[in-house]
Structures are given as C-alpha cells and as structure tokens.
Amino acid sequence: MAKTLLVVRIRGTVNVREPVKRVLEQLHLTKRFRATIIPDTPDYRGMLKVAKDHIAWCYVDASLILKLIKERGRKEGWKPLTLNEIKKMNFNSFNDLAESLEKGKIVLKEIKEIKPFFALSPPKGGFKRSTRRPYSQKGVLGENPELISIVEKMI
Image 1 (cartoon, helix red, strand yellow):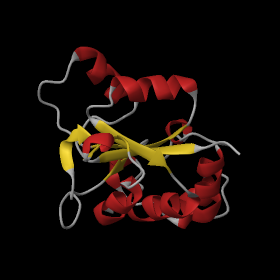
Image 2 (cartoon, rainbow, N blue to C red):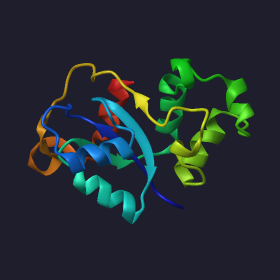
Image 3 (cartoon, rainbow, N blue to C red):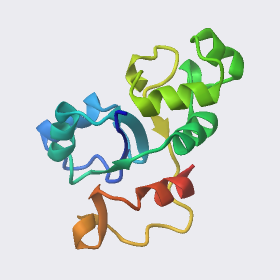
Image 4 (spheres, rainbow, N blue to C red):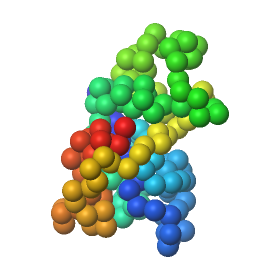
C-alpha cells in the first residue's frame, strides 16, 4: 500500500526565496493555510525538503481525506462538491474517492473537476507551538505527526 502525505502551508508569502516559491506553486500551495494530498515518492520528498521552512506534512488516512473532500473540496467557481459530480468522475461515493487517494491509485492534481488543494481556515484556538520553528525544535514546520489534530481544527 502506497503512503499518502497531507501537506499544509503554514507560513506566508513575504520574503520567500525563488526556488521555494516555485516548489510551493508546483504543490499548489500559493497561499497560507492551503492543503494538498500527494503520494510519498522520492521526487515529492525532495520538494518537501526544499520548502520545509514554510510547510508541514504528515501521513494521512482515508477518514481525514474524506472529511477534507466533503467539507473543503471545491470545483471550478469555488462551488462545493456534490455526490452527482463525484459519480461523474467514475467514483461511487466520497468514500471511494478518499480511499483511491489514500492508496495512491489517483493523484489529486490529476482530477480535472476538483481543485488540487483545500482552502483551510486558521486553527480554532490557535497554534500551540511556534510557526517559525521545525517540529523537532518545538515548532510546527517540517514532518509533523501532530498535524492531523491541527488540520481537524482548521476544517
């Protein structure tokens, strides 16, 4: 089973170096508090290392992907996704789409009908750790196993 990563942009757009800016655009994380789902491959890991001072990531399961798609999934024109549109994409339900994303059968950016990111709100109750330091130094950035609880407060 292929692992899937949830990536969230934590820091803003001011004073971002050009290579980091390019990587964030390729990940579709152009604004603060945007999230995306990517497969765990060496290419994507290299991109995450380049932008590690601006993003946080962790492994994600189908239940959180399902919650993100239902609550924050959008199509063109920022309209919410409906079951009819999911069925037009050859998926039986939201669960079927979430499991396909988790297993790596499909990549979010390859689905043309859905925006390749989720626009989240700032976390309710704020961040309990620094947003300027890596997770290993009591911050939020980089590989962060506690990111799932933060994202649930952002949905």
